[in-house]
Amino acid sequence: MIGYCEQFRPQFHFTPKKNWMNDPNGLVYHNGIYHLFYQYYPDDIVWGPMYWGHAVSNNLINWKHKPIALYPDKHGYIFSGCAVVDHDNTSGFGTEKNPPLVAIFTYHLREKEEAGRNDYQTQGIAFSLDNGDTWVKHDNNPVLGNKSIKDFRDPKVFFHKETNQWIMILVAGDHVKFYNSPNLKKWTHLSDFGKEIGAHGGVWECPDLFKLKIEGTNEEKWILLISINPGAPNGGSGTQYFVGDFDGEAYKVQYKDHKWVDMGTDNYAGITFNNTPNGKRILIGWMSNWQYGLKTPTKTWRGAMTLPRELSLIKENNKCFLRNEVIKSFDNQITQVLKKDYIYLKDVFGLKHSNFNQTEIRFNTNLSKRLSISYKNNKNESLIFEINPDKKEMILDRKQSGLVNFDENFANCFHKLTYFLSDKVVDVRIILDWSSIEIFIDHGKYVMTEQIFPTEFYKTLQISSKDSVRIENFKLNHVKSIWKDE
Image (cartoon, one colour):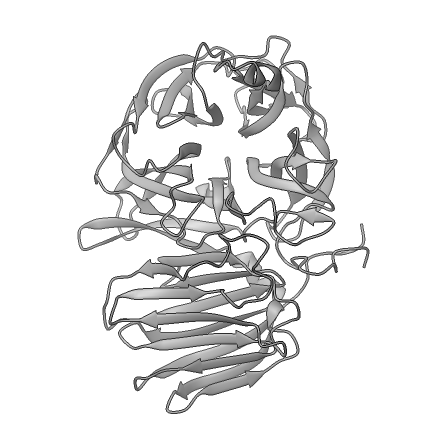
């Protein structure tokens, strides 16, 4: 294997070969290939002038690195955005037989920003006729100018069949703006949303809008994702969502309260793939947080993506909730190490394993019972997850998980998730990589994603309870590395 074995290097999460990466961009499926573009600085492991990096996959798990897709130019750095398949060649960039891929992105002109102006972000487009291998920028960029709006960025575009037009969602500091276009080149402002609703502890970023059916019904709702930094419930960066309706012009929420896609601290700027087979909504997020993302203790690269998650919508107690579960193709990466039909937690249940940092555990349990799950290594570093029905909280404690002192915000408190208490038996799934933990409970109704930096692999797993608890269908699985010689 060439590389990919440095300390903390994720073994089954996407990372760049080297240097800095943040937001996923341009997530799109076309001709059998999933494209992952991303914010990339090829010259250092800290943020710098932004390019679009590029990787491809046929299953969303095993990735192949591609050359840089988009470079900065006279209009500025290439900030976040999206990509679409222009099936009807509305842009005129391709042909009926070879419709173009079109990338829509934010230009960030540093010179204007440093001059104290607010019009330094505009929107540009580029097209590809060879399924993303090479890109040509539009001659008349930018296609959407900016007179005076600071933080005017992160376009997400889709084709709205009901009104036969392209829709762009764009953030503008503390709200989103909607635009339409017949051809991806000329854009008209439609409406605004969000100035007086949702979390506003920081700047709004990386919007997304899509339809989902409520599970078990034919009723559809429009989900609006908004990343915010700072202002997340456990500190720093996070992604909120709204449930409502969109008529091709304006968005209206059904419920005034907003919810969070992930209650961990390290799932940010996530957007969904356009043009997926069977219309599935698959999300990938940047597995970090702007509170400390520039300082995490990696050496040759910095930044990773979450595992891809399929989103679904459920309705409980007359309210709608997003679920996000790891995509099914991830199961092809696992091999079973141990299985137990049931475990009675009269005493501490303990397991030894050479490397828990490349495993998943799965089991079923009752959320009305207290439960503690801890991973430890020989250096007395520990990662603890607890279910506390007395407070209706799930708690993740990474205070002593390994290297934590690179930034005061990384492990300064317990991270909490409030849950609805019931006697229902639910599935618990905990996935550890070399520098991350992802927790999915009740098919992804409750989710926490966080970075960890143990100085050696965890080798002990302990599960305990102060209640009488029966765990069913316990499995310990090894997760294979996705990296091969290239």
